[in-house]
Image 1 (cartoon, rainbow, N blue to C red):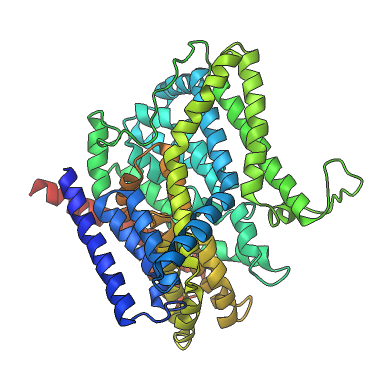
Image 2 (cartoon, rainbow, N blue to C red; image 1 turned 90 degrees about the horizontal axis):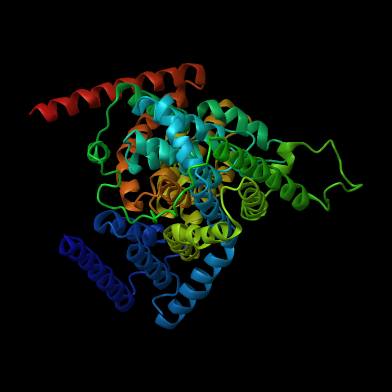
Length: 540
């Protein structure tokens, strides 16, 4: 088995090395900046990861290829770029998220130790009677946590793992549902860190208004929700997810990869109740929402809590347009951790010593996610030196004559950029100014084009193995990362294809009340056809 994984990896590495030597000696790549070559490093990393099923070496090879291209194949400069502009910048830029990951890991360990998770699992076993019920509860919980995608992935995963485990739902399926209700939900929620980011790229005073008008045209996000509900009602899976679900029915939730952060838990107390899970989670959510709001107010102006400078006319959305999740989430997470520790000790569910034992447990559980996130961010940093935005802008400018087909083209371009770079924020940051320059601001076709940009960014981010949201979904479900990527790809591509058709229609009929129902009918019909084909394949 190991030989099968090593051989394709060695072949691709040999190809990459040979390619670099040929390019360096023949000068065939004189200036890759702003050209199609700017997307080559992430493509190498993604292909390697999907073929070899090994994410760490795949990401590192992509990083090295990016460093070589950005430095003209100078080995000394490449090392400097990879270390300083890549890894060091990645760690410093993501330090806040790393802290929040560790804090969430510690809180999850405490919830398990206090018996809250086990009590919730027992309650769910009595009230959630089917796999469909467990999927829908997970889906609804994900929809409710719309403030931030990182927070969504980790919180939903921590709470719902005991429920889906008892329902014999594979961790890959759980990771898909988490991922499908993280970025897609945030992208259609006007009060979220994503809405704030999108609005910052629009003309002054029009950001939130344009964002809200684009929501009904965000076909990928909306049809993803329809997709989850329909496959739950129809009770079937296809692609590699089908095998994972069969394995879960036979007791193997991980399909043989149970090393994905699933650490041995500390012995739990029998005194824990459901309220010992619900109250800490509510407190965590409340504190994190407030911290994001507070940080947004502080970054927007010189303002401190209970200050004489407080202006009640500044609303919640204004604060979120200025917030920084890498500051607000650790800020709120630390306060929540202290409060939850005091609560559990006061309830005599654990001693102070036992609470401290949860700290290394929580850190260890999050090590795989931190490593992958560090390397994925490093790959983005080295790739950004190649200025892919210039290449994309030129490509879209040449397609300007196809105005009615532009929404569909923008959707595909956004998908490809987000898939290759692993960032939806960076994708719509590149494309929104271009879209607004192509279409008249506020026109119905312009709103369709902007929504296509946002939907494509979410779709590509959803599919990409180097996306931080995809990594967080794997961490939240404690699922092998490549298993998560490979099982959700067929589902995401199905919805993407339907969305592409919807954007073609919307380019000619710019009315979401017509196009969205058509998309829903196509989604349901497509799933019926796939189920029939799958059934016939099994019978044959």
